[in-house]
Image (cartoon, rainbow, N blue to C red; front, side, top):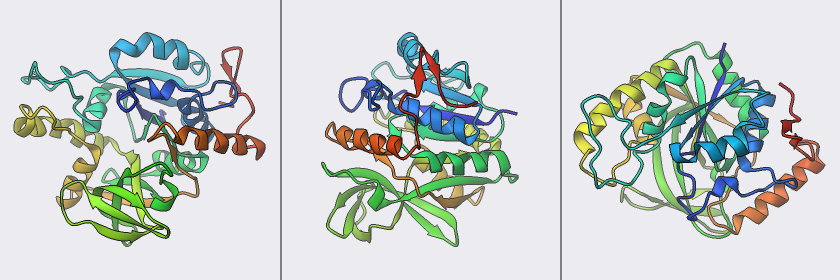
Length: 307
């Protein structure tokens, strides 16, 4: 049986004008993706699907894919502007990718069974993958997804504001996601919703989503099938995006599915700003000292992690 991790990597370089995921953060040239795959394998995942740009396939496979192919089943999906349902054509003027929902659409034929999704440029920590794997392996309800959340205080940057999805929860279930710009203060944050609604103050232990979800085949089918409906309304809007949080909100409101909320004791790290990289490098150094990771994840092109 496949226990699949889907890695969203098609947006490489959009933030810095460079291949951000390819900037080493480990002591021997390891990348964020390397630690993500290492943690996933340790947790029990046996298949990874990288969603990338087709024009970056050769470089990506030579740098990342080949050295893990002997430890986990590796497949690639290409998120292309013209990969649309039958009967739809991408406007010639469009340059913006169609969004995270479209990324899952691009991997539709490579996923069977329940699966988890992550961002390629986020460092989630080992416990997060154990929680995700538990869901992928043991969930028995086709109508039940997983939202793995962090306390917002564990996802902030010292170098500026960040965008997070404020998780609206009730009795352990997700009732909605409010995508917001987050500004940190001493012991609270100000959330400014991206939909233009009123900003609000919230505590540092407020749960947020960072594109870390578990999905069933039914949820995958909903994402794939509803892409056409999105295009009917938005195909000529050149900045429109088919986004996972919007899809989740819509399906929760329709009562089609539920999402269980789980937390993690992992510390999230990202590279929203170039200056964030130094903090991540130091964190990895500490994890190595604590024995969470080996000094070298790879040796002679082979991963040291167990299968």
